[in-house]
Image 1: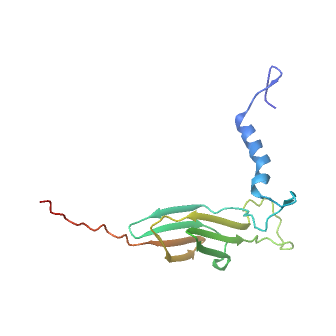
Image 2: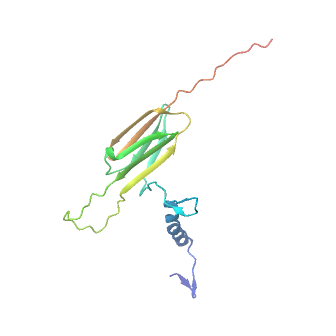
Image 3: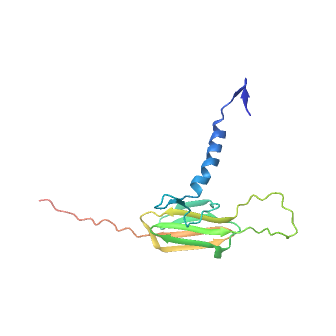
Length: 157
């Protein structure tokens, strides 16, 4: 406890961390209200972690690169639905009881992951490819050819 002359010293960072811990369960698992007013847990899955992502573009495409180490490509799903790119999947823990090891610390998060991104208007949802190598997922979303404005020269007379 940080005290100064018997009074508690205010630590804004500690307060924000405490607020985050208190609010995480509220926002992480939303509830729906039934007609009777009772709260019901929705039939959706909540992600345990979110892979880091880089998004870039060049003249012909958008590129999404996600780091998802220790995930098999068959455990990753890439979908475009209603103009939204969704990357989801699951990373399973490799440790098993009785594997002969004593674990002193496990920091790598496992479980389901989910990321979604609204695609720009010029993204072509029909021109998408994805490759996964060495724990890195590369998604390429082609750009639609833009209709060039038609120039009409008008003679003023």
